[in-house]
Image (cartoon, rainbow over all chains, first blue to last red; front, side, top):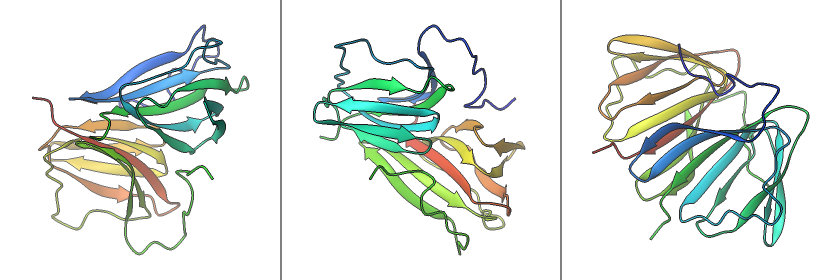
Length: 107
Length: 107
């Protein structure tokens, strides 16, 4: 059975769900499922790694310290290491499926 | 303007189209668009890197030396380094959009 990004999307999701789909030295591919979730108030991600992230299904808004970006299906963004960001909103209408690739920052 | 995986999907595509969306030391995230394309007869990919690949839109069939796997939207597969494989088929009905993450093989 081939694994699928859209498998097991339950209607009820008490908190964001993160699964590692593939990993190698310094690299991680994650599926993240949100359903109306946002980062806790005042919380910012501040990561050692760079992150490339795409919304595969659903809709979301990422906030950076200098602005925000709306993401619809297919929209993707690269977040350099140390660029503080938070998930400000995900649609309550359906599960939002993200793919995130974490990788070492460039020298 | 946020880049989108489904942008610039032209009906006419003389050959497979590959674009690097993000990269870091040892890591590459690529978008590949196929439209009825397959690997040339007798050609096998035989890579130093591991690859995680997902079909985001469309349909495809990957062949390995010991079998093949059909991929529909959302299906994903990890291909270890040195595992020979080829694209046996992609649907002629619409563009097939792949995301591929290339990363170092585990020690």
